[in-house]
Amino acid sequence: MSLVGIIVWLVIGGIVGWLASLVMRTDAQQGILLNIVVGIVGGFIGGLLFGGSINNGISVMTFITSLVGAIILLAIVNLVRRGSVR
Image 1: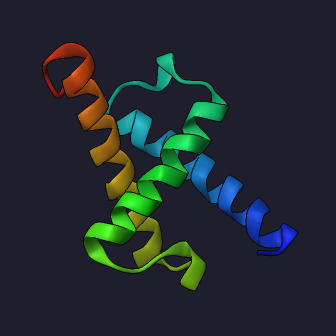
Image 2 (image 1 turned 180 degrees about the horizontal axis):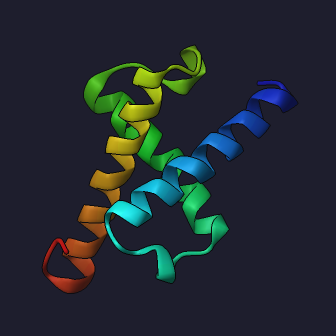
């Protein structure tokens, strides 16, 4: 993977993680690093569940897939941490 590819992962991961944290109302608890991690892991989860990946190219569909995966990740974390999905 090239340096440009890694930078794209970090930027898109940060945006996806931030949007997912807004949807799940966890934005105040997360910093930029956690947003990036949530976005990247969410993209991986979304890719496993729905197919497609940002590695195949950035499109609206891969962005939405990553966002849904990140929301699922935050829901699971909330469920484990609090016993309910906010």
